[in-house]
Image 1 (cartoon, rainbow, N blue to C red):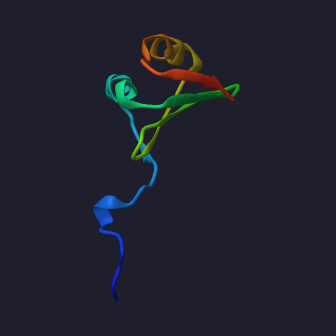
Image 2: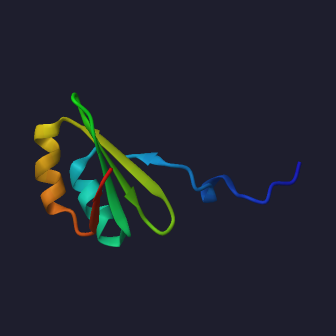
Amino acid sequence: MFSLYDEGDMDLPGEVVNPEEFVKLSEHAEACRIRRSKDFVKLKLRTPRKLYTLKMSPAEAEGVIKRLKCEIVEV
């Protein structure tokens, strides 16, 4: 069967587990949406090509949020 998309070109969300990598990706991002829960904080980084997510504890998240280099939107 013919596919219009190469599997490497799929625009699926990717999960990042390293906060340092997430901060580096924020240099090219349009915005970072922050979703806070009682137990964790989920950061969603929208780049022109892909959506990246990072899930972490609220205490750790504050340090990462301060270092982001893009617009921050609380959801």
